[in-house]
Amino acid sequence: MNDGLLLSIKNKVLEQSPQLSYDKAPKDLVEKAELRLGFPIPPILFECYTKIANGGFGPGYGLIGLEGGATSDYGTIVETYHQLKSDQESEGNEWKAGLLPFCGWGCNIFSCVDCNHEDFYVWQFEDFMVSPLNFNIEQFFHMWISDVDILSIEDYDLIVHEMINPFTGKKDFVTRKVRKKKEE
Image 1 (tube, rainbow, N blue to C red):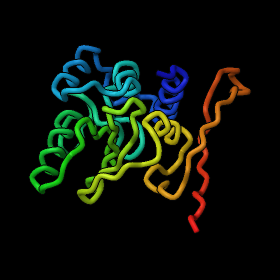
Image 2 (tube, rainbow, N blue to C red):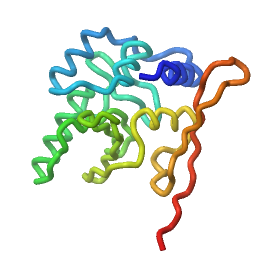
Image 3 (cartoon, rainbow, N blue to C red):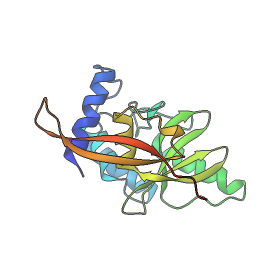
Image 4 (spheres, rainbow, N blue to C red):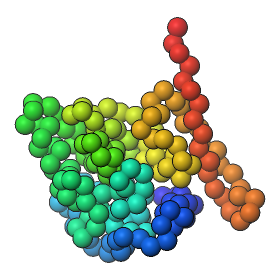
């Protein structure tokens, strides 16, 4: 897990709202959620919940929290996972095991993370379809920090540059998007 990324997330959160709506989640609450899910969540989400807040911050309507934290229309992150999985299966669609909805955008759109892949790729659930995207969860947070419109980047590749912040002297990251070249 990248400590610089967690600090950048925390700074972005405090920049947007110095007063968080939810307290930090205790580690045992995260572990309880992982047991109910049947798989571990990505380290960056674990750190966000335990070191920043129990959801309610981030792009769109923010991260979906654990018990006692921010909720989607379906409830906690665990309840949202089980509800979307159940809904998809009742429609005859397969829900990829370990595909965890973690950020709500409204209108039944969710950013999901593949918890069974070591790179934690992000997928999008929209219109009862799940589509893979071309970035992982850490890149997701880099984009949010850089004010990239995450929902409209399908035609772009993301380039993350590591840099030294000239004001703080600390390592930081800047994300930019480059339009994909059209295949001929």
